[in-house]
Image (tube, rainbow, N blue to C red; front, side):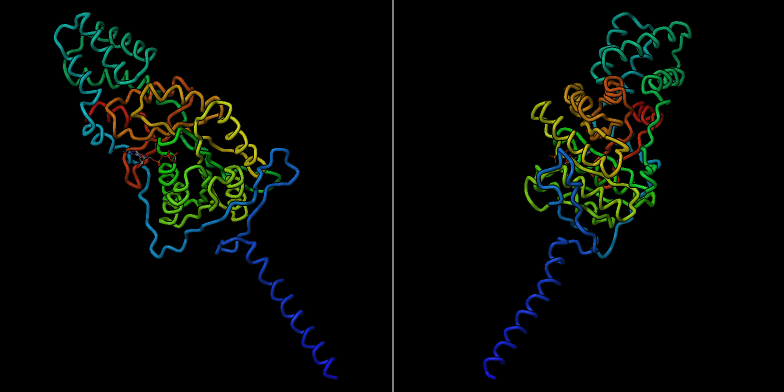
Length: 382
Ligand SMILES: Nc1nc2c(ncn2[C@@H]2O[C@H](COP(=O)(O)OP(=O)(O)OP(=O)(O)O)[C@@H](O)[C@H]2O)c(=O)[nH]1
């Protein structure tokens, strides 16, 4: 009898332990997401599937008690005027002074050309602008300051090109009858302001009442994911990330898009490290990220972030990124820190894609949709 009693106790213990682990283990496997979303590994039949696909962890960062209300994005470019004025003698002011001289000699025209080149406009657009100005000044004989200003405004506007479509592609694509999020991939050399731009862009989208998920696929710099999560949590936006240093960026990007699709999110914005070790390495990394993302949803935009203060020097790297990543739009950051606005024109010409957004400072709402007229008025200074 005593022998049977021990047997019953043993059976009871086995049952309790078995039941407990059946309930607890799956919960642990779901990661630390507190909104119930599960981690989503990429399809296993993929030949270039990331080694640690599905390893991304999710930090919702939505627990912040008071969410910030980002400003509407419209009209932000007006700030450019003040910022440019503070960053040194604006291009426009110098040109206006020269063009208003009584008799414009060859030396004056040389000086004007030099000013345009120093402003990073690039040789082609600078010559074009100069030619046009020379003809119109000769024909019209304008000297009166307001007429000179109008003329210069006109010509600058032409080279900046107000006809380009600068809107972000945010329409949600439909794949096999399912509406997916619009996916924006953000690439560029480290230090140009990618992570900050993704954070600011989340705010622009939230201000437009869109739901957003951020993907912290810059797994190279450990602090980048924290930085992004902080940006997101301030406006109630979820950040999908990995807590493991050096995790596969493609896996994190995939998980972010999967999470966005599962939650019926409008836009997923993916930050990348994009370190320019060499062209082949970069092609490998960005190629893998976009291939893995497109298994879940097509890429709506590939935005290249460029630092305006690096001017023509940044152009070579920009070209490599544009060749490798199929860039659809440019974000020009730190425009507040340079008097050389000409880079807007040069980069559009070189890469053949429009500047869509500009960074005008370090403040959370210092990212503006690019507007050609506001930009020209900004560099003309008033
Ligand atoms: N003045 C100014 N500073 C900016 C702007 N955009 C970004 N920054 C600053 O540029 C610095 C670098 O920004 P990050 O966003 O960390 O750059 P990143 O490209 O993500 O860098 P990695 O993560 O190393 O690749 C930060 O100090 C930003 O505040 C801008 O439009 N104007």
